[in-house]
Length: 246
View 1 (spheres, one colour):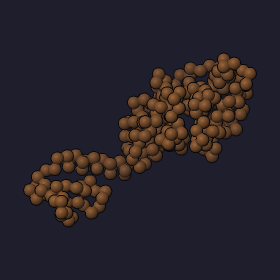
View 2 (cartoon, helix red, strand yellow):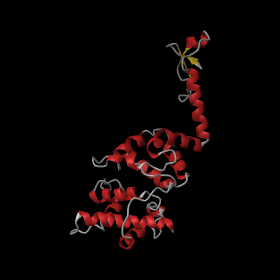
View 3 (cartoon, one colour):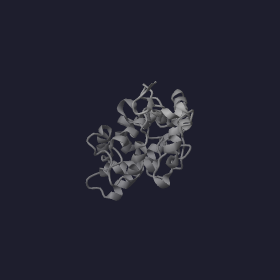
View 4 (cartoon, helix red, strand yellow):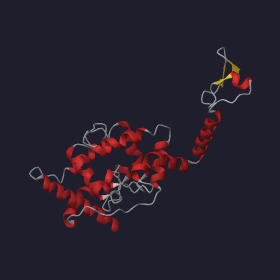
C-alpha cells in the first residue's frame, strides 16, 4: 500500500473492501467504525459465491418468498403464482423480461407491475441465475384447482397449443414454450386473458410474447361474446390441468 497525498491509504486493487481507510486509523491502531462489519459481509458474499445454492436460497428468501411463500407455492390472493419446480430457463427468462420492461409495464397488469421492481432488485451478477436454479429445484406444489370447464371442448382448443407446449403440456425449451401443467389454473386463465387483451405480448421486443398473443386469440371468435370467450378459456385451462393427473 502507498500513502496518498490526501492522507488516505488505498489498496491498489479497486475491488478490495478496504479501498479507502484513513491512515490515522492504522498509525494509531484505532478501529475503523464498521470495518469488521464490512469484512463479515465480504466473507458471506465470498462463501455464497462458493455455494450457489446458498446464494440462490438467500435471494429467494429476501425477494421472492414474501409473495410466493417459503415453498414457492404462490399466493392467489395477491396474484403470485406457484413457481416451484418450473424450468430454470423459463424462470430466468421471465426475470429478464421483467427487468428489461417486456413485462410489468402495462397499466392494467397489476401483478406484473408489482413483480417488476422485485426483479430489478436483483442487481448483483449471477443473482438471476442462482435464484432460478434454486426455485427450479424446489418440489412442485399442487394447489387446489379453481377453474372448471368442459374437458372435451378444452381438448379441442388445446390442439393448437400442443404444437408448442406438447400434447402433455410439459413444454418445449427449444420453442421457448414453458410447461403449463405446473402452473396454477387461475394463473393460466388470467395470463391467457392478458394475451387476448394486449396486456401481454404487445411489446415489440418480446419475441415469445408476440408469438403467444395470436395463439391465445384463436379461441376468440370475432362474433363471440366475452362470456363465450371466457368460457372457452376456462375449458382449455381445465383440460390442461387434467393432464397433470396423467
